[in-house]
Image 1 (cartoon, rainbow over the protein chains, first blue to last red):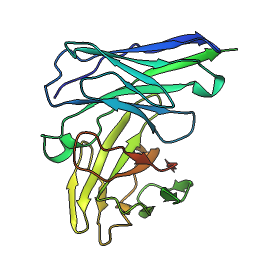
Image 2 (image 1 turned 120 degrees about the vertical axis):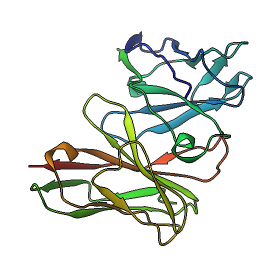
Image 3 (image 1 turned 180 degrees about the vertical axis):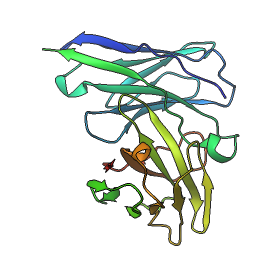
Image 4 (image 1 turned 45 degrees about the horizontal axis):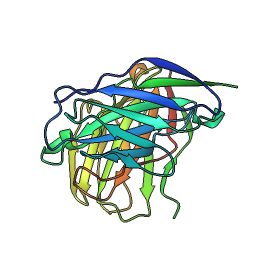
Length: 114
Length: 114
């Protein structure tokens, strides 16, 4: 299965942009790139996903490298409420069984400094 | 919509006791799954279901049973609780089987086994 690599932790100042990197050098052509985040004492929540093109939504932007071997989640203006663990996950719609479910790594702990 | 609901929020068991963690969703999602999260770790898949009457094992199924008699409910049974099952348990659901389906998580059940 394709794996992702993320830094263990990152810090950002409040109201500044945050770029959270993810490496996925063994990504297959059919893998979608998903980002979820987990606020303290809560279940994970969906942030954004993409396949090949960059994506924007109200929460964040996802920049995907041309070769798809890496991606970056961009929070345009970090707030204290954005402090969470951010997970970069690959999902392959072609796979079967448990491989179709989300596989979580250890993610990146984002600290936002006031 | 209430989304994904889980009960109880907290539970303390003695070794050897059995119990059922409840999970329900009101979004008519086909896919449901159970994860456990140990301190400082990512989520690991226990069991999942692709529809009523269909369940399968995930990464860490031992010691747990599931059933899916309705689309809405997906209970997780601990057969004989062990201290190693102390964890936070998350239930999740999603609609599509494709790579782009958004997964919705419940708030979690915090289980302690003494």
